Image (cartoon, rainbow, N blue to C red; front, side, top):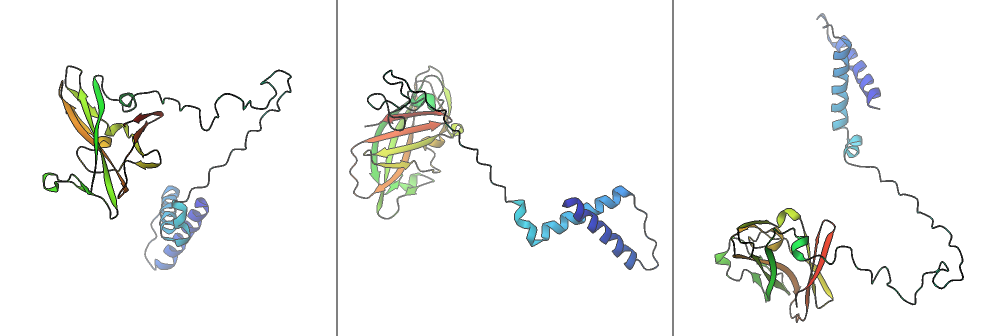
Amino acid sequence: MRKRVTGVLTATVLCLALSGCGNNQIPEMTGDQLQQIGEYAAITWMKYDAGNRSRLVELPPEPTPDPVQPEPSVPSDEPGQSGEPDQSEGMRPTEDTPVAGDSLSAEEVLGLPEGIRMDYQEYELCDAYPANQEDSFFSVPAVEGKKLLVLRFSLYNGSGQEQEVNILSKEAAFQVVVNETVSRRAMTTWLLDDLATFQGVIPAEGSASAVLLIEVEDGTEISTVSLKLKSDSNVCTIRLF
């Protein structure tokens, strides 16, 4: 299509040049120069043509692979070998199968340096964090009818030497589950002590404070809280209380 448009516009450019030159001498141009003029005109025309604008951003849908047909099962007289899944014992694949990597620790999922330990401290419900907004450059308020659930953590360095911690680079996902029924992804904030974006150097035998925030309905009574962490293909679930 582009070659056809280029050819048409090249011819058009030549015709305009011949009809509008009058007594002026037509400059001699090589084939390459004519091709360049045609391509420039084609690109310019397609850029401003309304019928071609959407083609610059629309992508064709990816082909859907044909479903793989399972091989027919071979009948057998032995228990559990009939081709039908044995429902009497074992784990159901969608509910009871453990997630690969779910036995990892939070420190492993977040890729924390050796000797750095993440400990849960406490929680609080508030209307805004931090409560004293004058002491902080950034503040996160809860929307009307909701409260902020603030989970406090400590990053302790027991390695014997200072360690640089960069959780932001892991691009980890933090999912908070309240009372085993309410699941919220931790809010993305500009707070300097946000655990998800924490960056800093922790001295030997020192610690740093960090928080995760979610919104819950006003009046919610907190009974249990769990934290699910995921980074790349690594996941883990921590029961905070």
